[in-house]
Length: 223
Image (tube, rainbow, N blue to C red; front, side):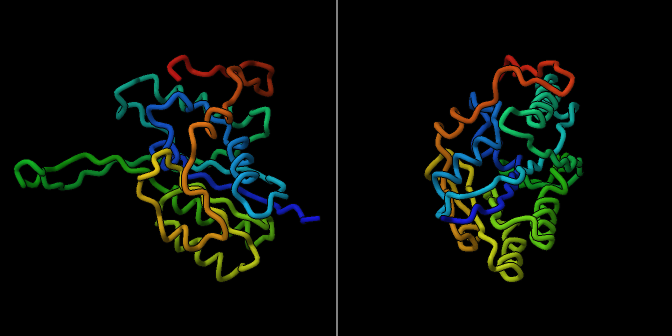
């Protein structure tokens, strides 16, 4: 009998959203159910214990969005994840920072000052959490959901320092022709190279998620 692998999933929220969820009807996503489904279908060892799912994201800044309801929808979703019937997802926040930079306009070639909004700390938080969990012997299998090659150095160090930990990588794109991180793929024991609409549709939260006070957290109508 295969020994269940203590498994922790680390989800790059920004990468998942813009690779698979934006413009879709699947934003009310039960991340824990999704990870369980992927591991059962893709991992060479289907015996696992999903210790926790860590979701790395950043709160939306209301003054930068075209839809003023966006921050409320995001907060509602993050709260729902913590009380999902499948089990709680740990939400770990970075932040957004606005920086004035110079950029060259494609049409004219002229340099202009632009206001650039950047997500901060996500890569660092993912890297530190993966390494700390490995160093404290909390995990036998890491599942990284991201297509960001900036995370390759952390995964490479874990491979070197903890070679017995199984490394799974999920590249969260619905488009078969999308760019994939070969660096992450090369560091993994197993890789799920594409998500399917079926993965997302079958991994949705219930329309109303009940919090610890017995009150419902409702799926946004726009989703």
